[in-house]
Image (cartoon, rainbow, N blue to C red; front, side):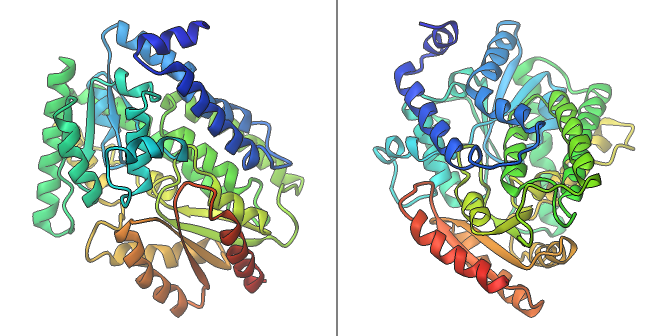
Length: 423
């Protein structure tokens, strides 16, 4: 048995099944991301970061745990990473994007719930997720009914904290969210034994803002016509962002920027001439889920913007760095995270307006609305998005799917027809 598999076995994982799961993900990666031509050399780092998510990154966290550092598992980008870092803990995303683990969740949970929830739980139930036994605490949030009821079940089995995210953005709701952020800070301090201080929180804010600026820079480069990078590769960068060490990630992304700018200077693009510019909007596409991006770009289009939690919602707002006291810093964090436009909010005109504005800003010819099956928030809101885009004379298509490949042929036909319509 390899040294790495020995570590996984010590964590209580089913090593054989874990290897089978990784092989499944690698096959999907090879058929989508790996099948591209003309990829930037700098993508090798982000490919490696994804593959190392269950390898080298796990080894890093094991070493940190041996030295007393706590790991906090998260399921949503509403959980403030800065507070976790300032409390000397490491935030790690726990979401799953693979069909492989879903049958293990369906043995215990209803079939008709979100694929993301089922994939994540299936990784835990099948003992193929190394982050499960590594985490010292898991943090959920109240963004949808499937998650809220799942947290009730998980809370009795692990150290679990739920952040109350309000469903509106009035002053009463803003105050409620600020209280939830302060409560999270107190929970982290109790977990780690480390007080969140002005200096260490200020450092964490700057680290995460630098990461966001780097991702914003990548988004700016994608505005070029033709873009120097595919939408599929940009998605891989974002997926790596959720789990990689932030300072290292930012440095690697800056190196990729330099390569992309050099490509632009000599007029090189990996995309075919005349590729239709498309925006991806809606549910997140977490690691293991490359299906729709691949189908869109294999159909002769290029995704130049992502309005999702694995896209602009993760990085588009910075935290105000001017506060000089702890209360000011925590309030600034709460304010920044409250600006994320999730479909859980009602009314949600901010998201509708931002989609139309972003479509114009990136010069897109059409929008692909991506909805995970049974995600009622994004599915219902898609009607308002479609109406707003139609008024702006921007065609759109709604894709409702899960992580399986069973509908790939049908989706390919619909997407090819949509791209043909754009041209």
